[in-house]
Length: 200
Image (tube, rainbow, N blue to C red; front, side):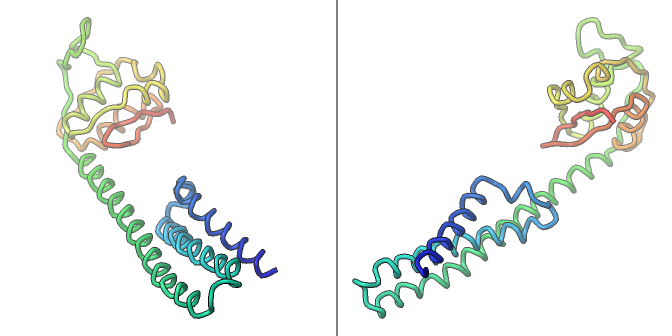
């Protein structure tokens, strides 16, 4: 019975290892990301501890108590060290995400301008009107942001290509995007430094 419990603990610990390895923690609630990461990394150490206990049970007939007990001593520092490493990594991930979010906020606060005559970015373009996606591209450039063509086309379809005549001068990018996208029932997101259009 004892051996079965130890084996079950080993399997549970290994499941935590593989679950973390495949990124299941990212599917869970974002606000508890650090706690979840810590628990999963603690699972690594628990798997190691359970494995050592299993070895003690399986080889107990051949190993003396003293040798096995000494072998278990390093398990506890490993548990603490791995849990701390997991917490540290989770904190680093959250800090990186916060820095990226702050950068996006700063870029959205950049003042931009788009008035006639509009840039003619392709053959056949007209200077008195501009497509929604080209307007977004021109505004994004001024804030050092990119534009995700494929994702925007997939999400917004024909709405991206509708012609508009914006008159934007010296306002934050956030307001400029709202001004040209809301009438077309579009919204946007920033992913990896690129604007992605979506339908409301």
